[in-house]
Image (cartoon, rainbow, N blue to C red):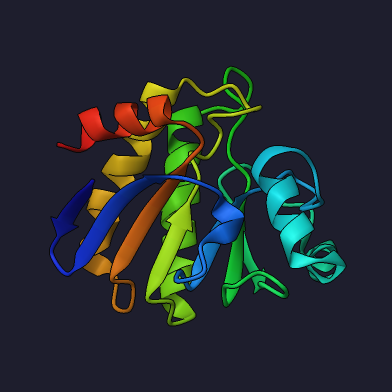
Length: 173
């Protein structure tokens, strides 16, 4: 599914965030230390190779809502933006922190002349954010941010399952 917001296309796919070869910038749902872990962080670190962890080391720790950027190393992308999403029920204000992840990632990617960016559903996995709330915040933030982007022309959400994609689709129409 695709939606046009001004000059920016927003699309939804089910897939592997580490296998988005035509995307300039991929977003890592990172931990505070920016180290390999499970889920998205593990997949991106495995695909990028050990240089990614080395590049992240001096940038850590980061706070919920914060984003930092590194090279992508062996990934097929130019850059990785690492965002620390809020842990649902612990990090407050959760909605604002989650929106900050998306805003900060978009700004970093745009500043580095990325023409495309791929997001996972930040905080909706191990951090326990309910998918419908997480999707609503993600889509609202992207819609509000898109008109300000100078370089990004494609925002892709790479979702873990068909069920997650359906939740995003219902909210995106």
